[in-house]
Image (cartoon, rainbow, N blue to C red):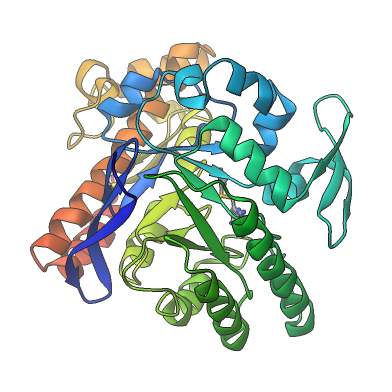
Length: 372
Ligand SMILES: CN(C)CCSCc1cc(N)cc2c(=O)[nH]c(N)nc12
């Protein structure tokens, strides 16, 4: 069996090249984790997600506890078998989704009670139940149960929220079932306040967890405030363990956050925008709804080798989108995931060769490329 461990292989400034060893395989970092909320990366076969280079997927406690239910997935062999993905899966702990999706939510020290946004059934989610659900799912990486502090928050509000999350982190650790090759990550909170981020990091350090995430960002603060916060809060987390920035982000967010020491990312952007006709390319973003593409037989992105870019034209993709054809959403999702994986691979190579600054310059120059 494999023990869960992080290998730091190279550094270029604050950017890190690493490898996470888990019970379900290895993850090369920096890594982007496609989101598979309801046990599927929407519109993609898992083998095709793997073909883009993805080595780990993200799942959601909240969605799966509501439907089809964690006990049912466990009876059916666990989430890996259920969705036919045998590589690592990281699951979020549910609190964030309750606050963003559920109805009639009530937060107490015990946890959160809420009504399902699907059928109105009442649920109760506590650190202990979140750990039980993630265990039933068979998650490779379990996230502690936390409260994502809204933005903006006063320092007092952020302190109270963070301190509850730290008490919940302790309860999460006490309830987590240790298995070789599996991990529980702590979630740093504290909004944009350096003293609170430090207090959160010190509380998490007492739990001696194998990995951590930076929570409470990508909540509407904007890129500059996110970067300014990362400038001080990432270094507060142990350098010999993975650092995951939750819910991030667009391509320029990934480049800036890798340069500030982040190893793992997840975001719905490539998949959700793919279903909405938006394509990320090496020369900026395109919206295939736009009529200017109707006669353009060039590939979407001439530096990409995904099926959308090697087998079809922009004109065809535009046609599929205008006709509301399912294949349009599938091909643009596939391309965006391939683009994100290509971006992460490019950063891993740049860090290995000590040229991350140059990579970032070329990336930004390409994005302003114009005439795409
Ligand atoms: C699909 N993904 C967006 C879901 C996983 S990441 C969700 C998520 C996003 C953001 N921005 C902050 C937080 C946070 O502070 N805590 C938790 N538990 N989850 C978070």
